[in-house]
Image (cartoon, rainbow, N blue to C red; front, side):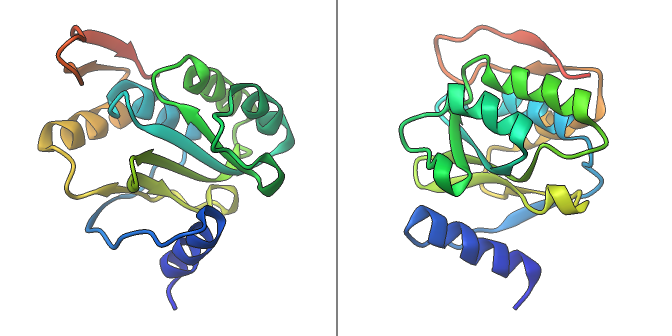
Length: 168
Protein backbone atom coordinates (compact mmCIF):
# COMPACT_ATOMS: atom_id res chain seq x y z
CA UNK A 1 0.00 0.00 0.00
CA UNK A 2 1.47 3.37 -0.99
CA UNK A 3 1.94 6.16 1.53
CA UNK A 4 -0.78 8.15 -0.24
CA UNK A 5 -3.21 5.22 0.16
CA UNK A 6 -2.29 4.87 3.84
CA UNK A 7 -3.12 8.52 4.52
CA UNK A 8 -6.33 8.28 2.53
CA UNK A 9 -7.29 5.29 4.70
CA UNK A 10 -6.59 7.30 7.89
CA UNK A 11 -8.60 10.25 6.58
CA UNK A 12 -11.52 7.97 5.71
CA UNK A 13 -11.53 6.46 9.20
CA UNK A 14 -11.38 9.90 10.86
CA UNK A 15 -14.22 11.21 8.74
CA UNK A 16 -16.29 8.04 9.18
CA UNK A 17 -16.78 7.35 5.53
CA UNK A 18 -15.17 6.68 2.22
CA UNK A 19 -13.42 9.35 0.18
CA UNK A 20 -14.28 9.06 -3.50
CA UNK A 21 -11.44 8.23 -5.87
CA UNK A 22 -10.31 11.27 -7.83
CA UNK A 23 -7.67 12.21 -10.36
CA UNK A 24 -4.95 14.46 -8.97
CA UNK A 25 -2.40 17.00 -10.13
CA UNK A 26 0.85 16.78 -8.13
CA UNK A 27 2.63 20.01 -7.26
CA UNK A 28 6.06 19.32 -5.80
CA UNK A 29 8.25 21.59 -3.68
CA UNK A 30 5.58 23.26 -1.54
CA UNK A 31 7.44 23.17 1.77
CA UNK A 32 6.29 26.61 2.96
CA UNK A 33 3.01 25.99 4.81
CA UNK A 34 2.36 29.72 5.26
CA UNK A 35 2.51 30.25 1.50
CA UNK A 36 0.31 27.19 0.95
CA UNK A 37 -2.32 28.55 3.34
CA UNK A 38 -2.30 31.99 1.69
CA UNK A 39 -2.68 30.38 -1.73
CA UNK A 40 -5.65 28.39 -0.42
CA UNK A 41 -7.23 31.56 1.01
CA UNK A 42 -6.65 33.50 -2.21
CA UNK A 43 -7.86 30.92 -4.72
CA UNK A 44 -10.07 28.18 -3.33
CA UNK A 45 -13.87 28.47 -3.60
CA UNK A 46 -15.41 30.46 -0.76
CA UNK A 47 -17.84 27.68 0.17
CA UNK A 48 -15.02 25.20 0.79
CA UNK A 49 -13.52 24.43 4.19
CA UNK A 50 -9.93 24.07 5.31
CA UNK A 51 -9.30 20.80 7.16
CA UNK A 52 -6.19 20.79 9.35
CA UNK A 53 -5.20 17.42 10.80
CA UNK A 54 -2.95 16.75 13.78
CA UNK A 55 -1.86 20.37 14.44
CA UNK A 56 0.96 21.17 16.84
CA UNK A 57 0.00 22.73 20.18
CA UNK A 58 0.35 26.36 19.02
CA UNK A 59 -1.84 25.75 15.97
CA UNK A 60 -4.36 23.74 17.99
CA UNK A 61 -5.05 26.66 20.32
CA UNK A 62 -5.80 28.90 17.31
CA UNK A 63 -7.88 26.21 15.59
CA UNK A 64 -10.02 25.58 18.67
CA UNK A 65 -11.19 29.24 18.45
CA UNK A 66 -11.94 28.99 14.71
CA UNK A 67 -13.31 25.44 14.53
CA UNK A 68 -16.54 24.72 12.70
CA UNK A 69 -19.09 22.37 14.29
CA UNK A 70 -17.93 19.38 12.20
CA UNK A 71 -14.45 19.53 13.78
CA UNK A 72 -13.30 16.79 16.12
CA UNK A 73 -10.71 18.49 18.34
CA UNK A 74 -10.13 15.40 20.47
CA UNK A 75 -9.03 13.57 17.31
CA UNK A 76 -6.88 16.49 16.09
CA UNK A 77 -9.23 17.09 13.15
CA UNK A 78 -10.24 20.73 12.61
CA UNK A 79 -12.37 22.41 9.94
CA UNK A 80 -12.41 26.18 9.44
CA UNK A 81 -14.12 28.37 6.87
CA UNK A 82 -12.08 29.40 3.84
CA UNK A 83 -13.95 32.72 3.70
CA UNK A 84 -12.93 33.84 7.20
CA UNK A 85 -9.80 35.46 8.61
CA UNK A 86 -8.64 32.22 10.20
CA UNK A 87 -6.47 31.06 7.32
CA UNK A 88 -4.47 34.29 7.39
CA UNK A 89 -3.93 33.86 11.13
CA UNK A 90 -2.73 30.29 10.59
CA UNK A 91 -0.46 31.45 7.76
CA UNK A 92 1.18 34.01 10.03
CA UNK A 93 1.65 31.35 12.70
CA UNK A 94 3.19 28.98 10.12
CA UNK A 95 5.62 31.74 9.07
CA UNK A 96 6.61 32.41 12.68
CA UNK A 97 7.19 28.70 13.36
CA UNK A 98 9.15 27.89 10.19
CA UNK A 99 10.96 25.66 9.56
CA UNK A 100 8.85 23.66 12.05
CA UNK A 101 5.54 22.59 10.56
CA UNK A 102 2.08 23.61 11.70
CA UNK A 103 0.41 20.23 11.29
CA UNK A 104 0.50 16.77 9.74
CA UNK A 105 -2.07 17.38 7.01
CA UNK A 106 -3.89 20.15 5.16
CA UNK A 107 -6.98 19.52 3.02
CA UNK A 108 -9.53 21.70 1.28
CA UNK A 109 -12.99 20.14 1.26
CA UNK A 110 -16.03 21.24 -0.71
CA UNK A 111 -19.17 19.26 -0.01
CA UNK A 112 -18.07 15.63 0.10
CA UNK A 113 -14.98 15.94 -2.11
CA UNK A 114 -11.43 17.02 -1.48
CA UNK A 115 -10.12 19.83 -3.68
CA UNK A 116 -6.62 19.76 -2.20
CA UNK A 117 -4.65 17.26 -0.14
CA UNK A 118 -1.27 17.67 1.50
CA UNK A 119 -0.05 14.90 3.80
CA UNK A 120 2.88 14.43 6.17
CA UNK A 121 3.79 18.11 6.34
CA UNK A 122 5.28 17.46 9.78
CA UNK A 123 7.56 14.79 8.27
CA UNK A 124 8.94 17.03 5.50
CA UNK A 125 6.57 16.05 2.68
CA UNK A 126 6.26 18.95 0.25
CA UNK A 127 3.80 17.61 -2.34
CA UNK A 128 0.35 19.12 -2.74
CA UNK A 129 -2.31 17.27 -4.70
CA UNK A 130 -4.99 19.32 -6.46
CA UNK A 131 -8.15 17.73 -7.75
CA UNK A 132 -7.79 17.41 -11.52
CA UNK A 133 -11.46 18.27 -12.01
CA UNK A 134 -11.01 21.81 -10.66
CA UNK A 135 -11.54 24.58 -13.18
CA UNK A 136 -8.34 25.22 -15.18
CA UNK A 137 -8.35 28.88 -14.06
CA UNK A 138 -8.37 27.85 -10.39
CA UNK A 139 -5.47 25.46 -10.99
CA UNK A 140 -3.48 28.13 -12.86
CA UNK A 141 -4.18 30.78 -10.21
CA UNK A 142 -3.26 28.36 -7.43
CA UNK A 143 0.09 27.61 -9.08
CA UNK A 144 0.66 31.35 -9.53
CA UNK A 145 -0.25 32.06 -5.91
CA UNK A 146 2.33 29.51 -4.74
CA UNK A 147 5.10 31.03 -6.81
CA UNK A 148 4.53 34.79 -6.72
CA UNK A 149 4.36 37.58 -4.18
CA UNK A 150 0.80 38.55 -5.11
CA UNK A 151 -1.89 36.70 -6.94
CA UNK A 152 -4.88 37.95 -8.83
CA UNK A 153 -7.98 35.96 -8.00
CA UNK A 154 -11.04 35.93 -10.24
CA UNK A 155 -14.45 36.07 -8.58
CA UNK A 156 -15.55 32.75 -7.11
CA UNK A 157 -19.20 33.74 -7.02
CA UNK A 158 -21.32 36.27 -8.96
CA UNK A 159 -21.34 38.65 -5.96
CA UNK A 160 -17.56 38.83 -5.54
CA UNK A 161 -15.32 41.41 -7.09
CA UNK A 162 -11.80 40.88 -8.42
CA UNK A 163 -9.15 41.29 -5.73
CA UNK A 164 -5.39 41.26 -5.37
CA UNK A 165 -4.46 38.91 -2.53
CA UNK A 166 -1.15 39.08 -0.70
CA UNK A 167 0.58 35.71 -0.86
CA UNK A 168 4.15 36.42 0.31
